Image (cartoon, rainbow, N blue to C red; front, side):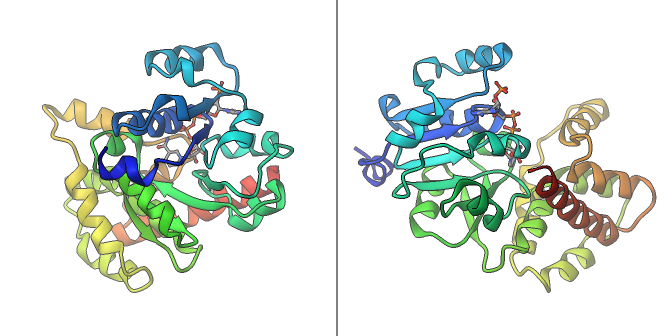
Length: 271
Ligand SMILES: NC(=O)c1ccc[n+]([C@@H]2O[C@H](COP(=O)([O-])OP(=O)(O)OC[C@H]3O[C@@H](n4cnc5c(N)ncnc54)[C@H](OP(=O)(O)O)[C@@H]3O)[C@@H](O)[C@H]2O)c1
């Protein structure tokens, strides 16, 4: 038994929402040696998602949300923000560690909707997690959660102020932003220094971002990677569009932070 298993020896893990992120977390737990019989995942019922769960060899781990709430000691919520209201009446026990991965949903709103204290994480993209190079912001600070993330190979950044989640989110969008800015020959260092004044870990995240940019064989491949990172209406898209319109790197990052706040406000209005 290695250190990872000792840490999680008494735990049962449930992942509500076995989509892109949820499957990556589940698959990484399995790869770390976490026993499948103590890992549960749920999904919203789409046949295409079932096929992806099957491909990820997680069919035997499928459970319903009620069972996940009743049996898990650690629960990750990895649904899209708009599905949060479907989790409203679930029987969370209050003794499990519940962790939301949802971008833009504050801990106050989570408590209002789910009626329990919920920790938040903002992980970097599934590609970085799969390569063992992931990072994640954590709010509020929690030792056990930070340790669990380290089992997954994720370096945790504990935030003192939940508002910094927006800045961290821009940090995990940096790989694509750096690639675009690099091509345009933009000065990035001064922008990082400016943001670092408000969020001290930003420079470290910038270095991380430079290190996770994959090697590409062609410009076409590079362009495809950037496009793949730009979810419509998302934060990376806001930054990349800003850079393509001629903004400085600092202005583009500020637009990314503003976009994160906007997404958060509109998510609150739909719930
Ligand atoms: N992907 C990323 O890079 C990333 C990074 C950081 C944070 N996040 C956050 O992670 C969350 C998930 O993102 P994603 O990209 O993984 O989205 P996704 O691929 O759409 O996954 C969401 C999953 O939730 C399932 N779901 C919907 N309603 C459900 C319910 N009532 N009970 C259980 N499962 C339900 C969906 O199942 P069906 O398909 O069957 O509807 C789907 O499998 C988002 O809130 C996002 O902000 C994502």
